[in-house]
Image 1 (spheres, helix red, strand yellow):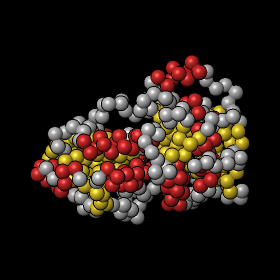
Image 2 (cartoon, helix red, strand yellow; image 1 turned 90 degrees about the vertical axis):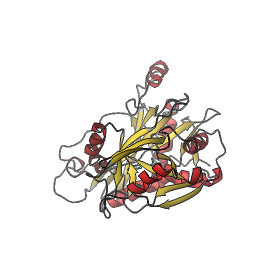
Image 3 (cartoon, rainbow, N blue to C red; image 1 turned 120 degrees about the vertical axis):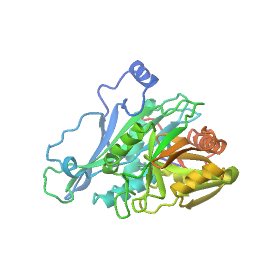
Length: 369
Ligand SMILES: *Cc1c(COP(=O)(O)O)cnc(C)c1O
C-alpha cells in the first residue's frame, strides 16, 4: 500500500526536538500516555472556511478562550490507533482508515464537522513520519496515536459550535509485559449504565468516559480491575468492559460470541479484526447477545471456557473472575485461556509484521526526509 500525499499539511519542525539520549531515557519506561513525542498536527475548521491551516508543529500547549464551547458543553471526540515497528526496521500503522471512518461517525453524532479521510490519513502519515524515531523497537511496545477534535468557538450560547480544532498527538507506550498476561477481575454494574439506545454509546466521545468514571471507581472499591456494562433497560445483557469489547469462548474453544452492535456498543477495530481473523484459526464467530445469568451459568457448567476483552490500548485482556451484587464466579480456572492467547498472538504477529497481512491492514510510513 502506498502512503497518501501529505502535501496539504504544512511542516514546521520543532526547533528543539529532544536528543537521541533524552528520547532513549524517556522510552525506557514510557507508561501509558505520559511521554509525548516532539510534534503534533493541528487543523482548524470554521464555518466560513471549512478545514484549513493544517500544520505539523512542535508539541505545545493550546491557547483556549475560557468560553471555548468544549469546556461547557463537551463537544469532544477522539480516536486511538497504533504504529508498530516492523521486522525490517520500518513502521506501519494498523487500520487507520477504520479510525478515520469512525471519527466521522462520532463527529456526525456530536454535530461536529467531518474530516476528509485523506486529511485524517495525511495527519497520521505526517506525524508518524516526523516522529518515526519515537516508534519503539522494544518487544510489545508501540506508538499510540491520539486524534481528537474539540469545539473552540468562544461563546457560551447553547448550539453546535462554528469553530473546531483537530489535533493529533502521539505517545510511545508499554501496554503489557511480553509473556505475562494478567487476567482481570470485573465488576458487573447494575447501578450505572454507559449507554442507552439513541444516546452516544456508539460515538467515541469524551463525555462517555466522564460518565463511566464513577462506576469504574465502584468496581475498584469491590476489588475489581474493570467495570462490565449491562444494557440500560433490563440491566441484563452484557455490553462491554470499560473501554473494551468482550468475547466469550464457547463449545470447548471452538466458537466465539461477542455482543452484537445494538447501537449502545462502541464498534471496536480490534473487535472487527478478531471477527475477521478467528475463522482462519478454526473458530466460528457469532455476534449475538448474552445475559449476565448466561455468563455465570456458562462458567459454572463449563460451556464458557474463556472470556476476554479487546481494544487498541491493551490488545487482549483475559477475564479471570467476575463479581456482581448477586454473586461471584470464575472463568475457567481464572487464568488466561489457550484460545485467548492464540488470538492475541495472531493479532500481534500481524501488527508487528511477523505474519502475513492478507487483509492489507498495515499502512507503512517512511521517516520524514
Ligand atoms: C475505543 C473503545 C473500544 C475499543 O475500540 P478499538 O477500536 O478496538 O480500540 C471499545 N469500547 C469503548 C467504549 C471504546 O471507547
